[in-house]
Length: 323
Image (cartoon, rainbow, N blue to C red; front, top):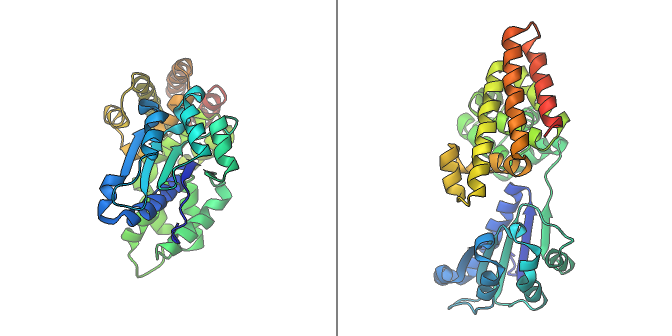
């Protein structure tokens, strides 16, 4: 792209931070060519609402006073297979003066449209990093940003704030501001910052529960307990999170926009997918069972001699197994 070698179609899916980075690179490359006419050659479509045909029709339009037009289509994975036919035809004969950029959370390569894009080299799937690769990614990201972080500090940050790369990058930037550029970020700095980022750990815990990932859910729970989070507080945060997921599920089903959902649920729009992803995965019955389990666990902690930490671990395992 830096050389001006821009494909007529890109389809990005997978890890959100990596997708966003790639989208920004394409947008910058295409619109830099357009110069002052960039505003006339940049169109964005919510494909679930507008349909693929509108985006494809715009993609066939010649750019205005520029070399290339950028057409962005969001949520291509939420379009029904039968409605992808206009895209299938366009893939066979794309407009060379348009860059059609399609964005998805996850694609099904069994569908004809995605299979055709993969065959022609238009499909890019950014896989989430494994936990053991996060610290290395952090060190590389820090170097690219001119930030010095010690290896043990990178390991600690990866353990506390991972695996969301966007959140890791944000925490890294916050640490750089907190520490300054005069010295390297140390473990103590990361632990000091944990007090501000600890509340977001429940998002990761709930996400792991919603995905049925028992090992990760237990590891996250144990990590929160190691950081001296009271078990009752964790249970309270889980209750609040389940309620937020339930509310987000109802709003999404009613067709509410992302902005309206974030406002109604009461969370930062940046973290909206932390409730929308489990909202898609968890049925209403599963959410009802989760709230009932949380209620029973609260009673047990307050009325029995079972260690609160042990009861919380049992609760997290049961929730993840019964997602």
